[in-house]
Length: 248
Image 1 (spheres, rainbow, N blue to C red):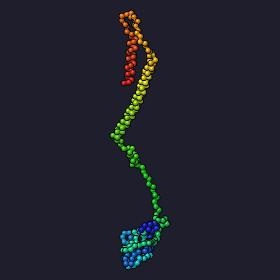
Image 2: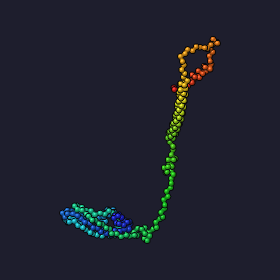
Image 3: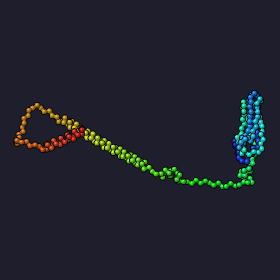
Image 4: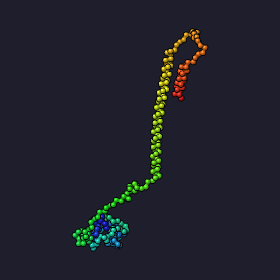
């Protein structure tokens, strides 16, 4: 017996005084069929039980009342209507008649003779325990030295990699600058050489095929070397070596 079955709150103080029911059986006259209406009693047995024998009868509709003495709701268990044999039960309605004894439990209402004022409700205060805080536990737990050393080693490795990368970029920039400078120098030298070759073409003279006699008279037997010429040749040789180095 519950609130959904009764249609009211199934609380202490509710007494059941009777049951109204109706149903329709569907069967053939030759079939055996029995209908039982019953309600279990808490602790064993039945508060009520009623059976209808439909053997050798056509199906039909039954409406009936089961009177009860005022029985406390606390004694009622599960109730049911069930069929046994060949047939079916349709259009079932079961209603419980009840009365409300307000003061059976004196605490239901202040007007009851034995009513006792309830004690004030003491609010439950939750006490914060920092030792049970998971965040505090994580913050205070012992650090793993191996883990810290590993993190420090990884950080130093990353810094070294970044320093190497910066150095490689700087060296690459210097190499590019030297390459550009060497290319510019080589271009300037080639331009100067072409300019000399072009100017020499204007000084090309056509010498007629005539015999020229030597008219130089040496006053001394020995010819003194020209030191300025040696110095000039040395500078020319150094200049040529520098030019050759540009193409290596």
